[in-house]
Length: 298
Image (cartoon, rainbow, N blue to C red; front, side, top):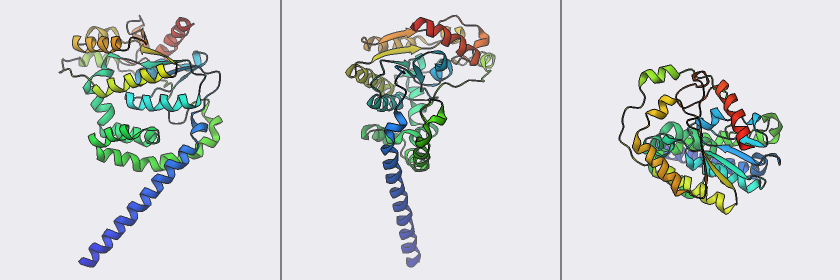
């Protein structure tokens, strides 16, 4: 029995050492290719970023000199890391449009996007190499098991991205693993209305979400980048049922970022046929909205 325990312990130590070595190596090789991974065309000076609201609403092919790097379920922690890394290699960027929807700033959303197993594993797999010590400590403190699982998955992901970085021309101007415009095929609007999805829930501020949004604002100020808080179109049923506490919190946070512009298009009149659900535009809606947005920005 003693021999078995010793052998088992040595086996675990060996596996752990190999995994650690592979992680350190994968992290090193991807950092060596950051310039190739994060460099965008010199003519791109507008960046759209945020969660699935921006991902599904902004077709950057219809807005000259822009790129959409939004991704579904993206907490502001990852948005901050992406912006920070992007600005290191692209001094031509002048304006960043960041998703700023009503539910982005509440604890219910924060717990899912930042600390749930699904999103910790998914985002750490993609972005662990971009995070700093404080970012990682926040995740480890709140969900250490999911973080470790994400780190293990990041090993293979890093090597894959390293390989892809030599073939950037195949990605049609997109940044590898950074998200982008999603041609949504959702058709859940009537289903969501029938569900009455806005039953009253206890409101709490998403403190980490607010903290990282303010970090983004400060970073943009330091880099002389114009930050625009973009609230994409929402269905009238959604807008009419937002709890007052959530609306007031959204206004309060916006007012605390007084140096940044607000582009609130949540009440833009768009036909029901353009919505995939209560908060996301479908392909038809994205085409209509992107055309409108392009004219407005001009």
